[in-house]
Image (cartoon, rainbow over all chains, first blue to last red; front, top):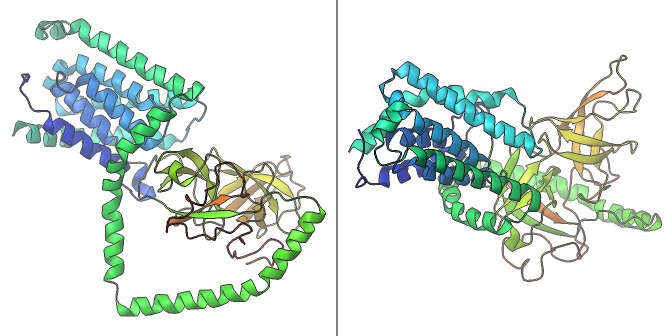
Length: 158
Length: 317
């Protein structure tokens, strides 16, 4: 499973770009609240799968990209994503032998932590978003995790 | 922890923690500098230019689809559209007949009162880029930015009325905060009797609220709210919305008033940036206003666009 340094960064960069696009692709307002944080899931995947290639650098850059496209205070998503990706990297070996259900539950915890940091920074910078629906994204994210992980591992194995 | 140490023989155990702390401090520093000191304008501007291709790449298929649908739409549809537009134009011209006289009268009265607050001088048309910025904030990205002279706090209209104001300006794009954003408030007055208050957003694109009116206030469903021009951010006399419902609970001191926005917040594609006076900050110079995208009249006392109701005009139902 452990990847050597010759591994190509291409799938990682490509999947991150696609996920960034998915984060801003226009959706009807009704399902917009259910949109999972695709880029966050992709960053988690690479943090677990090959932290040497992906890891925190990817998390930080992806977070900055989210800050810029979302137009929020610079560093907010970067902070949340860095911390949670570090956690994911830390528990990755246990995570790999988990059943699908426990994996999804762990991802749910990670996503909730991510949302909480965003929530906290929102409040600290003076524009709190208190709608309940922001906590929907972690649920949906955890639900699609097995699908996404399968897809990504297939694409990176080739 | 043990498993982690065993497998990472390359001394990465402390590396992870170290890098985590490093990156987190960097991110925290960014947040603080961005929030407190506003020193990061240049960095943000650079990053936004880097992100622009991604935004274009996401938005263009949808715009392409719109273009495709328009170009293959049937002759019948086009004819129907044309008939509808002609009808609307006739109606607008009809309303316009009285407009010149009303405008002159309004100017005279304003001069008498020594009040020139908020007469719109320049317009610039911008297109909303087809992107979802944040599901929980009512904001849109528009394809006009610092290059076109757009500035933070600038009033933005659509064909129905006030749309919002500019929250952030990048080189090529700007972010407009909608009237309905929960963090947005706009000074308004009731067109019927001049009652002044503040309309705040609710986070719902179809609804605004007037939270600061006493239960005894003279306001009824159907009242038209227009901008009051107080505060100087918005031009005076543009429609903001109509009162949809007034709930008066005798036990409370404040009335609960729902307002339906006049602008098509959820449907508009084209927006108008407004410069209040020719000498307003960063008004477009002759060169900046020159591009073909400037569909507005650049002459100084340009009349505001024909609205369903001109200031002091009849109230539409």
